[in-house]
Image (cartoon, rainbow, N blue to C red; front, side, top):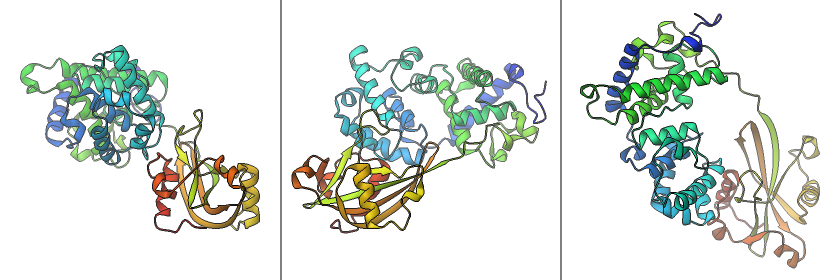
Length: 392
């Protein structure tokens, strides 16, 4: 049965035959054994190390994660060290990776493992799933990769691979379709688990099968221009046979980004700079930043030809700061979820009373600032200061 004019099987009929599952699994295992990237977390079966890598890899590219993972494992090599670390140490190690709730959940989970599991990383899917910050995918990844258990995984790469292998044209974000994809992923990893020994070459089959699906999506079955000619399962790919591989998965168009404008002030007083820590309930909680405020819904309130008077008024009204001697420092653009943010940083000098300056935040030297964990954009401001004089 076909599902409309885009083609593809419906979720109800997407289950593979036993022979197809075995062909897919055997081909994927053989391909992974010879073609997998040599990533540092693939050189261990330590569940702690694999857990850290999986959390870091959420919303983050492999090439970005590698140096972060290496630094983290040197500084916090096990559950006990993470549980006991100062929160600012954890955030500093995570600085630049974004989505900082991940780092806070890692420490919360390590503390839970210490108190409830005697410091031993849990070994079952259900137990791993109870850890803060761990969802269905991450629990499946850890239990399969670290413990070789037949637990399915379904991330963006695997969704793309499976929708193409079985030519599923329905939107994978819909609940029924998503559950069918989980079923297909489970059938594949269970097929790997049940392969005859002579077909498995004594490999950790569940671990390698799940990693092969992720690896295929990352290297071959890419979002645009998939390399079908290099694919080890090309002959069993229904979407490729139908000429629809590049059209799948059938995802909704992304929500249009919302523009926002923020003005930050690098404020000097007695050779030190003012920084503030973000509150607990805010995005990027407990990270450090220079005083800043969003311009608001009326961009005309302050134009790119900002006068010093308008900047002084903005700083006074939005931040309660008495400032003068403004000078442009750096303008940058970055994204957070669906927002496209323009951040304009200006140098300024504190003009209030010295005792009031002490209560405005923390006044630190540039050298002292480097020890703190900053949001990514404000870390770039700080780095820019290394090449320019900080005196206003």
